[in-house]
Amino acid sequence: MPSVEVKLLFDKRPRLFVGAFVVLGSDQDGNPIPLMRATATNLRTGVQYDLPAGTVSFFDFFVQAWPEPEFDTDLHLGTWFFEAWDVELNHASAQKDQEETCTFYGSRVLLLRNVDDQPVATALLFPGQPVNISLDQVPEDLENLWARVENFCLAPALSRSNTFRPLLDLLNE
Image 1 (cartoon, rainbow, N blue to C red):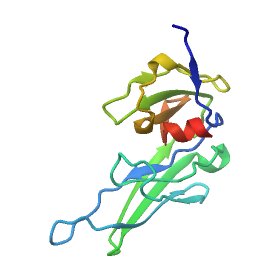
Image 2 (image 1 turned 180 degrees about the vertical axis):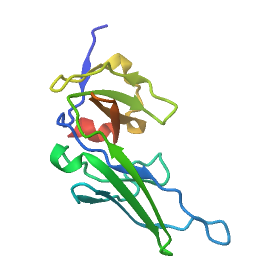
Image 3 (image 1 turned 135 degrees about the vertical axis):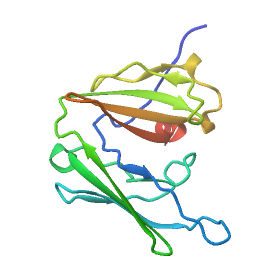
Image 4 (image 1 turned 45 degrees about the horizontal axis):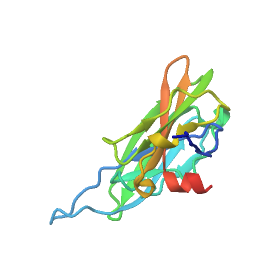
């Protein structure tokens, strides 16, 4: 049987993943209090992103800047400060440090149904290298598959970001 390859056409430029898991409070009856707003602000540069909920449906209470901005070292390196407010104006915050230097980028693509079921993973890809996944590796239930694009920043330390997109959206772009 001949091999057919599926090419995932996604933007190969480095993208910034800015996201967080938000633990929602509960009302007196134990019902979650809905999230009203979440933001991420780079404390070094002042750039701020709104983080809407629901961009990745299999993670509850996940917020992410969407669409992901193109990575810009002048804007995005440094300490990130995250804030979230629920509809009752309860507030929570956290911060995350990003390496101040990054000398090498790489990435890989995984296909998954959920966090525990990831049937396909590519090797480490270098910038500009095409992504080829053999058709015999791709499960038939395309409508249930997500593409997880991991971007790596190597040196001086390893930083990793993940982008989750429905596979059919990527194939149709």
